[in-house]
Amino acid sequence: MWRVNHFDVRADDPERAMKFYKEVFGWKVEKWHGPFDYWLVMTGNPDEPGIDGGIAKREDPNARILRRISSAKIPPSDFCHEREHSIRLRN
Image 1 (cartoon, rainbow, N blue to C red):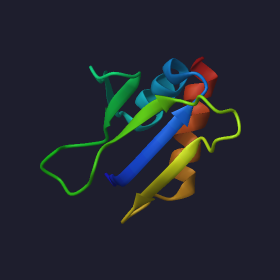
Image 2: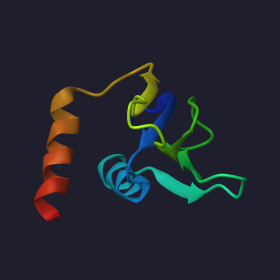
Image 3: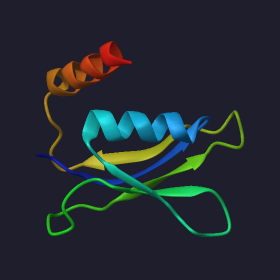
């Protein structure tokens, strides 16, 4: 399975964003115990190449939601579309 190299997401509703990424990609999310609300995201096996990321609440409505996402190998769009469609049908 491919793995994201780096990302940082800003979400209006972090709980909803976490649920989406957990269900669609199988990522693990845990609350960071720091001075502001931030959730650490683990995208795969730590022994495989790649970097994990995080989700933060978007404070400025004009700020971009997705700051950055990149991958060395991206799955076919059909794969992601089918998983996303499946998740939406269940919810």
